[in-house]
Image 1: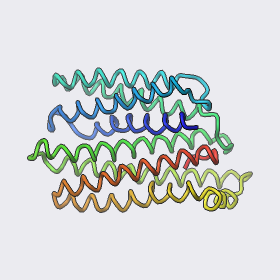
Image 2: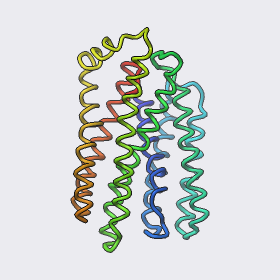
Image 3: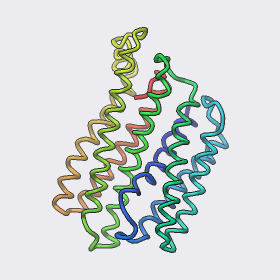
Length: 269
């Protein structure tokens, strides 16, 4: 369980950071931030791959997700070197390759996952929706937090870039909440599984995991997103970055408890 949780959480974080780089441009910001972000993501994936090599997941059929993630990490390293020499057109092509192989790894890992509640054939698709939305959320909140620090490096940097990433993060929060409801809708549609019984299991017997998942992974990010947007509109980048720190911690805790619920109930939430 620990090996799969680690693989899910940090592979989604690394791929999600690269995914959100699409919404800003090195031509207007400069290449230093892109070098730092891609290096951070590549290190994350390197650690994930090393951990998976030492402690393989017992609930994955096949190694194709790991191979695809390794390809994504390799392309990240090449991207880091290409963006360093300001070959931005080639860097954009490589970024598309990084995102494509990374997202394919996450999707394939959902179909290779063997420990799921039967939902009339929808179970793996429910996991895909949840893990892709988690990738967007983890990546957006981490990248936006790191970008907030770049106003210390480049004080005259336009606030528009931080505003755009804040909007991306807000959309990602909405997608993550929608994915949770999608899981419950599919569960309700599968008549062989009483929804009331599952909700009782979630809220009472699994309450130690469920309520922190809801508080840290849903309620706190929504509240913080509103506060962050308010500070961005006031051009207060330091306050926004401080709130983003809290957002990163909350989302990591929320997704951590989400993975534990996946293993305890065999249901992605």
